[in-house]
Length: 156
Image (tube, rainbow, N blue to C red; front, side):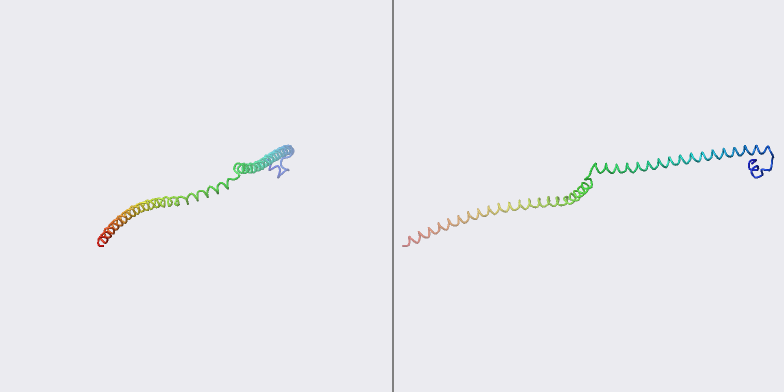
């Protein structure tokens, strides 16, 4: 407060105040110098921090680029492989019902083939029986004809 009063009213006080005023001016200039020094240091630290942040940001970008390059080098055909795997999954899903249908049709085919073979055997047996009957009938008719022929021959 005294310093403020002395600055506003320099006529108060006299000689003693002049030396006090000089010392307060000197203290004020020391204080300002210290403040300026602190401000300069603060600016230096701020500049260093921003410079470091810039470098960190730059390094981060470089690291991200390097990571992308490494991923690309690790598997350059990854996308193509992924597409093919998805297509395989789709085809696999389509194959499941087709497989079931195929098994069902094969079973039907086997049943029909078995039925066909049974009917074919039955037909063969019937044809053999027919041949036997026709042969027997022919023999009997021939025998009858011979008897009739003998009878006709005996009449003359």
